[in-house]
Image (cartoon, rainbow, N blue to C red; front, top):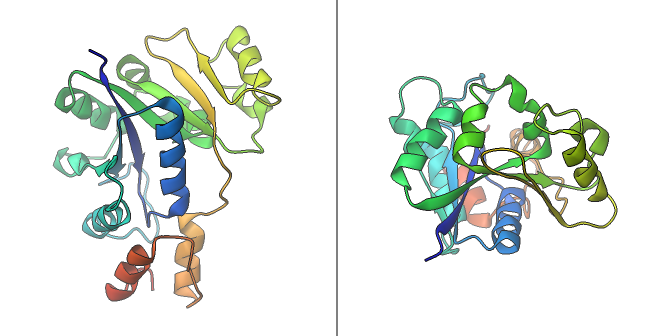
Length: 219
């Protein structure tokens, strides 16, 4: 029997917006996943300005994904002491979801930052990585990653022209580079618009906007 395929989508989700939701939907559909599990960060390793409480961010994710039966959310980081290092989160989820095939979803910018993460090798030992490439993406930058050899760099470069998806082998797990739709939406910009009293309509689900207003977040 095939293993259940679960995509793990981490982030502060401060707040969650349609860019997060659309990219999760595309990854799930293209890779044939059974579920996408959103994992809000509880105590990020680096200080974040204007970070809403974990309770509010968790509630906003729950509200945003309510109508999608293939989306779930985990509060697992709230039960892990200390800073919320992804390596620790993945280890806990790997134990909790034993018997499933896990994929950790990230953007290209995050993939480039991996060498500076806490124990990045744990990711390659426990999960497949899905790296979302939103056009236009910079092949030259990606080729600088220490996690790719020259042959893998060549395969990645071919994506610029004609390939929708590329699987890079050579690790205990795989790195999957996946082209996704460019939606130039950022949580930072949404918070700025709210602070200025400007409209954020169509940038995030209406129910999330209502929650932000009701709880006076980001003002």
